[in-house]
Length: 518
Image (cartoon, rainbow, N blue to C red; front, top):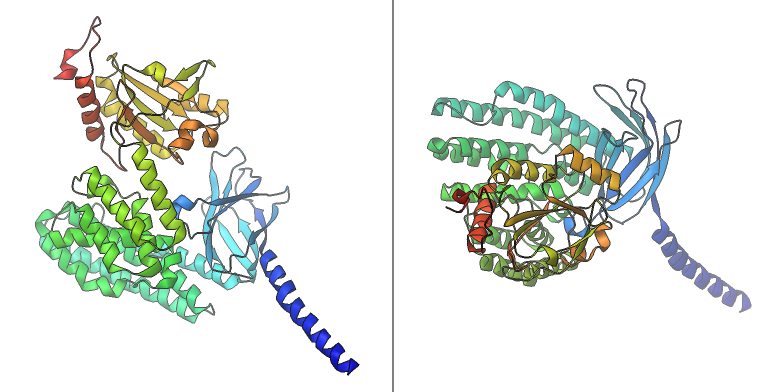
């Protein structure tokens, strides 16, 4: 009896250990990486490997996890990442020590239990990356697929001269589209064969098919160029597109919901097909939303709607629409979406938009000028104010500033009823100074200020500013007039500024250019 009881106790302890301790081990399990960087062909120095990943499958509002790991004097590095119990994507980047050049950058998918040894050889023209360890086959295949697309396919594509998509007649159009289709069939067949013969799991094979060497996306992109450039031949273009749509396109399933590149391509696919249905250049925002709402289900639908709400699809692709339509769509999306983190993000977006609705008072905020003086928004009342938020190194900020300087500011630089409040987000005053001196992001003719601490500044927190450029047009009473949508043209912004100026009591001053108000 004692032996029996002892055995039962031992079995219970073993079960507890296997359940409890094994669970604890799982919760602490890490995905391991070691590696070495060599650079015999380049003199650039480097000291860090930067790792970025998202726990919510690259859903932008959820943000990214960042990890910097040191590369020692021998080029050796190592790091570990949490096991998320699912495949997830990472971005690896090596910059030069002075952060002026990106020396190497790759995007991979991780799986539980990966244990990878990477060898990175930096070269003047090409880099070489090799892998050993558990999961290495997946990384090697990713390299092979990307090399196939960006080198072999892209080189042959140049000979087709699709260019801007412009053609002179229907014969040339049919010839170019047929040649493009043949080329894609050739390389897509190679891609599918490489994936098929690999020893990867079924899910990982699907992921690599969805997110690497995306030939359908390139087909859709080039068809959109033909469509935009040749209105006369749109019927033929549509016919050619539909002929190959099912051949080139991989239909979504639940595993595709982790593939953000594929999902982004789906957004543009739906847009192009709506344009084709209407034989138009612009589409209805409501119709577009409904294609996502009705055409997909479950996680894929939720992620497409979430990405649509926060996407960079430019405003010019849609017919003009009232703010009330956008707000009703977002409200419907909030009720429809089931994924908690996407629903929360949409609800937050609705709240943010309510704060910048026309005629809402901008919150009082204080900023610091370069000489250390404090400047408040209330001190700038009485004039039309364009708020422009930027940081040094922001490509979009530079693009906006250059367009504004070319298309709008020359007509406003002498207008004493207008100001630009240029708000810098860099913590380092040196980077702010460099940004001003470069003239890429701002002008010395603007009111240049800084937040000091981006994430804790009251203005940035209240309006949930997570990126730049961030723009807001304010009237003389401190009320919000307008906030540009993604891709808003300078013509639209100019129109709003001059509409506001026409309503503002004008100051008289020597040399006033009255033509500005005509």
